[in-house]
Structure formats: C-alpha cells, structure tokens
Length: 364
Ligand code: M6R
Image 1 (cartoon, rainbow, N blue to C red):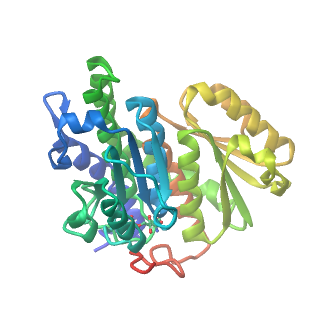
Image 2 (cartoon, rainbow, N blue to C red):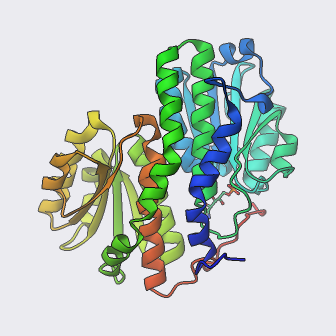
C-alpha cells in the first residue's frame, strides 16, 4: 500500500504535485475562479470586515501564510489563532466576521469546538477540510475541500500543500470580487498556480542531495529556522516537521526577533536554516544570517534562483524556482520536508508513527 515507497510520508510527499493539481483544477473555469461550495454571494464576500482563522499544528501554519496573503491581496484584516486558544479568549465576532477553520482530518477536537463556538456567536464559518463528510465539513456553513486524498503519515505533507492552494484560491476569489486585484494580475497568478505541480516535482528530485546534507546533522542537538513574513510561517512548519519526526529540538523565529533573546542559544556549528523568498526582505534576512554566522552558526539558506547575495551570507544554499511571491511557501516547503524526513530516517526514527503523536487529535 506504500506503493514501493519506504514510508507513507515519502509517498505522500511525492503525491504533492497531484494534490495541488486536484485542488486547483476543478476551481478554474474560463480563466476565472469558481468555488461553488463556498456558499457565499458576492455581496457577502464584499461585506466581510474581518477573517478569523482557527486551526491546530500544521493547519495553523497554513493559516499564518494565509494571513499575509489575504491581507496583502484582498486587504481584509486577518487574525490567526490556534483553536485551543481561540475557544477560551472570548473572541470579538460580529455579523461581518468570517471564521475559517482549517483541518486535514476534520475531526480535531479543539478545532471542532472552536467552530461551534464561532457559530454560536453568529459568525459564518467556512471549513477548509480534507476528509469528506467529517464533523467539521458537516457542521461548517460552507466547505472548501482540499483534494489531497487520504493521508496516513502522522506528519502532514500533501494535505498541508493542498491547504495552501485552497487558501490562495480563496484569497484570489475574494480579491477579485472586492476589486483589489485586476484581471491581468489574476491571469498571471492562475498561470503561476498551474506551474506549481511541475516545480514541486523538480524540487522533489533534490532528495539525494538533501539526504547527503542531512547526514551531517543527524547528531545535532538543536536546529533553528528563521524567516520573515510568509517565510516566517514556513519556518514554523519546517521546524515542526523536524521536531515531530526526528525528535531534534528546534525553534522557528521571526528573523528580526532573534536578537531579543534566542540568539544566545546559537553556538559554534549550530545549524540555522534561513528561508528567504520575498525579495523586498532579502537585505534584512541577509543581515540576520550574518548575525548568526558571526556567532559560529552554519547557515543553510532556502532561496529563489538568482539570489546570489544569499550565497555570500550562507554556507549552503538550496534554490527554489521563481513563482508569484504569494505562492513561494508551496515550493520552499519541499526541501524542508525532505530535510526533516532524511534526518529522521538517518536517526532510525519511526517516521510514519512518531512517539506520543496521533494522526487525528480527537481529545482536547
Ligand atoms: O487534522 P488536522 O489538520 O486538524 O490536524 C491538526 C494538527 O494536529 C496536525 O497538523 C499536526 O500538527 C500534524 N501532525 C503536523 O504534521
């Protein structure tokens, strides 16, 4: 059932191009975006004053990415919360608040409870869900399915990638309705979306190269991830992937925040994975990379082809191809997933079933 792959996680990583295609293609019609299941009129989309995204774990990380995308592209204010916090903080919800709950399983207890809480307070709730007919899918006012197919490995990969695509599509749709992007921009983004599956496929070919690199860090005691903006969101996902399957301690930091405390943990040889895919932030990131390097860190950069500046500030560089800046996470996550996977395999960990974790967290 693993289709010749050593682990479900590996198989599912290789299913990402398909998960991405299956999630966007049914929603592209004649150069426009149509999300039938959304269950919202154009008037309703125009009247949204605030979006609250609620999720756990990796789904929370896609929500963090979505915050940047929705705010910049659609100019709608977005709050993102982990479900177990949202439930107990007396959130301010008005008639014009859209609550989005994101969940692969559709059964996560805290996320489901947050959905119920939001509905009770009068919010319209949209679920971004992978499992068809799951509790969240049934109880939400509208559901946008991520068509990733069944995911077995505890560490999510293809469902995460499909969630990103669903969220980009929602942001594009809302931006189009609210008039914050023009027809040309939309066409360009659709073209870029269509290229993502092939680009992901290409990045998966780096497996051997990443394995070699990962071998050097199997005995690491701690690994840091840094980024800004969207790249901060993805750093958190890269760090979680690594922790959950390899048991190496890891933290992700907003790069500018490092010097407010965490940089004291950097020692000679500490690996700092730096993600820089947003051109306007390159310079700022490079100075953060230099900061840790002068403290002895080994800097691995994940950046966009052609960013030669990063080469000077890093000890090792992995390139991703160009795409729309909003979509960079879909590409940058691939080397980070492979890295976590190779480290975990090298350490002899049970990759598909890490200790203490369950695929679906149905207890609070
Ligand atoms: O099924 P869900 O998307 O609601 O699950 C949320 C988290 O439990 C999940 O993303 C978890 O963090 C993964 N193990 C991460 O790989």
